[in-house]
Image 1 (spheres, rainbow, N blue to C red):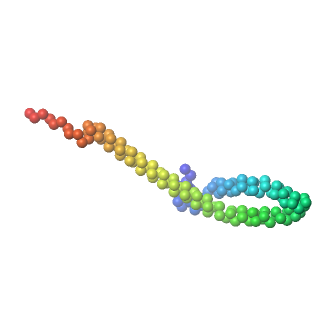
Image 2 (image 1 turned 120 degrees about the vertical axis):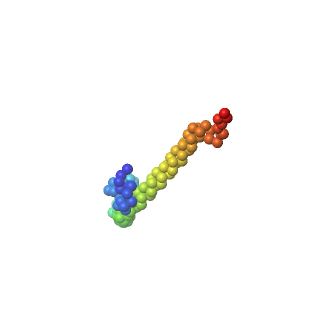
Image 3 (image 1 turned 90 degrees about the vertical axis):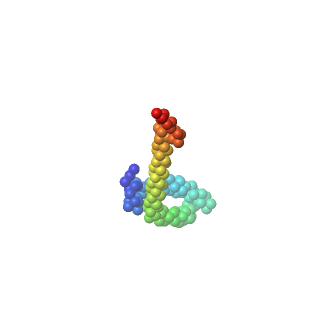
Length: 133
């Protein structure tokens, strides 16, 4: 397990790999809703104005600028958000480990009790007494 995931003092500073994972989550969205859809949307708008691509670009470009601004604003939040996610994962892993230790302790106590019962010859049963004499 990576050291930064275990130590609470490191949770506020996500690793470069977690930040790059967050940025890579934006990549498919930007390809599907940006690069792949932009030519289709531009062509569709241009067809509404008699194949006038100048008007189409004038309409589509402000939307692209707004989308770019949203991505730039999201970039400043991705580190905090990924740190929160990693903190939640670390907390859940610690809780799960504690629960597993508790189950293991219960099972070992039950096994010990079972072995003590079988060694004592059935636990509460009365033992035969030695003959008098």
